[in-house]
Amino acid sequence: MRLAKGPRPPSIKLFCALNLASGIFELVRGLLDLEYWVGALEGASPQYSWTTESAIVLNSAIFTIMLIPIIAIWFFASTFARSFVTVFSLLGLAGLIFLIVDNPPASLDVILEDAYSLAIIATFVLLYLPSAHTWFAKKPEIDPATFI
Image (cartoon, rainbow, N blue to C red; front, top):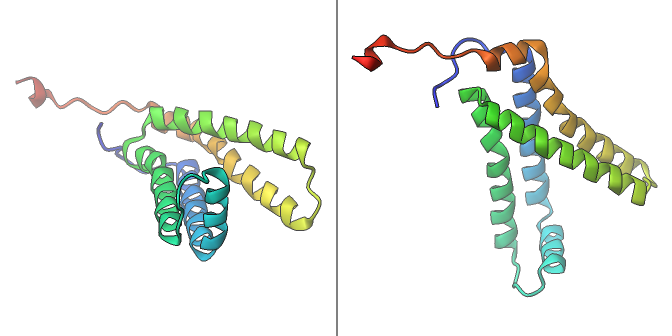
């Protein structure tokens, strides 16, 4: 992979900024509520002994994994990362729709949480705006010295 050259279009900047901010927000929110995570993990996998340390590791791992496509898009203009984000955004959108249909929001907190999730999922559209499409389509120049 070669580093992407030239300025990033505003849509790429906005995508990366929104998703990075979301990742930091989720990391901080998870680290501030470790007991919730321990309970959720024990409910999902009772055969393991979950501790606050394992919840910290899990939150950190989720944040790190979330950074991978952001870094691949920002530094390498990776079309694979764009496709990866698109597929998982569409899966997340389908999951959110099923969740809302099965459990209609009953409070303002739930409505705001669903709206936040939808907004973050929808950021993948920024990767397909014309300026972003042109930026992804740029082929790096081949250095003639490579073939000497």
